[in-house]
Length: 127
Image (cartoon, rainbow, N blue to C red; front, side, top):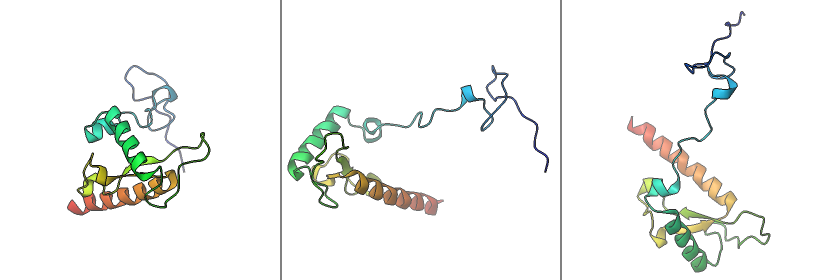
């Protein structure tokens, strides 16, 4: 099967050959560029987020609310992450302490993937 001839980079000023997605190596998009951070997403500052995390950590004694794992023993190990127990898209409050808990990294990843799947299914069913 014949291959298409190489094309130029889609950047108007560039005359290099495209290597991936119609762009040369110098003009590839930056991964996650433009992705909002929690402060903009939830409408609260990063300082407020850190304060909420400290309050929840004291309340829960640094333990994961999902599996009960305590705070990490190794200081180089990543700590627990602040998590919304009821996701925002399902009606959970953004900064209510009753809706916040600490989750270890593995529990947080598993829960976030399940929530993203539910959110995508809900969004697709509305179409």
